[in-house]
Each structure stands twice: as structure tokens, then as C-alpha cells.
Length: 212
Image 1 (cartoon, rainbow, N blue to C red):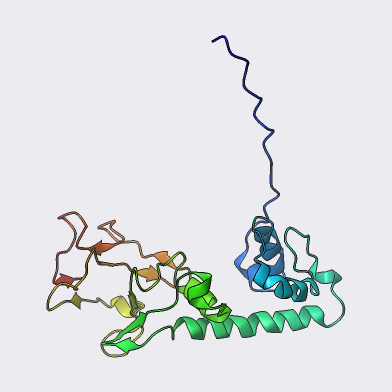
Image 2: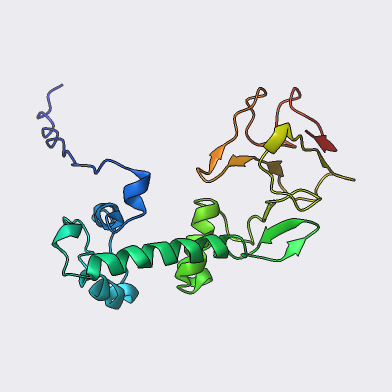
């Protein structure tokens, strides 16, 4: 009371968000999504040369993109590049650390720009596994793709899996185990409705040393 009215709230900014389509994202049209997201990011000075190279095929922060307007042969070349990149990223995601007792232990997939030293393939491979991971001095991420017989962990034929620990994992803070559905990278639905089982879950979740 007795004070001037506050300034009016600025008008709401509406964004024309491109509708996501998995098939589109795996074509030359992925640039539509990249350009949109880049419109909200500040280019790093160390990547100025990369942005200049990207601009040659229509990649620029916030810029519209029309694949059919590309010069003849360029769209096909981008499509081939997308396929090659997907294959390379998938392979890298499976080789981000040593294999220890059947677990691929990812030591250096996450971290700061300085930690990763502009290794974009490593960054992409780690992002395919999971976003926003901590650097290895904060957390370690062992990943299992196959069972003890070398068979892919996909539940085929009603397969059941059991994870046993002779002793609880030695940690300073906590440990947890999550199960993801591939290729969507989403949690696997189950009756417990706990998606990170470990030493900090409620008592009704499976207890160490056995998880089924």
C-alpha cells in the first residue's frame, strides 16, 4: 500500500515448437530440431569454426530449415551422414569404459567441457546411454547389456534375471540399480513401481544381496 504499482508482466513469448517424430529425427530433417534447440543456447567461442561449417548445410541457431531446398546431392549426403553417425554413436556408447565382471564401467563419459576435451563422439555416446550424468569423480555408472551367458538382456521368452552381490557395493554415498527399455531409454515398467532399487529405497523393495 502507498507504493507505485509494479511494472506489468511482459507478454508471454510463444514458441513454434517443431513436432517431434523419431523417423524425422533420423533424417536430414534432424537439422530442424537442432536449429530450434540451438536458438536457446549461447555458442561457445571455441566452437565458432564448427558453427561456420554447419551453416553451409543450413544449420544455424533458430534458423528455419527446408531439406528439399538443399542443392542436389546434399540432402542425400546428409542422410548418409546421419546413418553413419548413428552407427558410430551406438558403437561408442557400448565402449565407454572397461568390461569388469560382465559390467561395462563408464569412467569418462560425463563431465565438463574441459573433462571431455571436445570429444564429441564420446559426448554423443554417453548422451545415448543417459543424459546429465556426473563425472567419474562424483559417480560411476556400470552398465550391463548381456547376462552371464552373453545373451542380450531383453526378456525374450519370458526370461527372468537375478542380480546378486556377495556384499553390498562399497560406496561413500549410495548405490542404485535401474533397468531401461531400449532403444527408447525409458524405465521398464514393473509392479514394484520403484525405478532405482538400492540402499536408499523403502523396505518393501528387494533387499541386498539379491534383486530379481
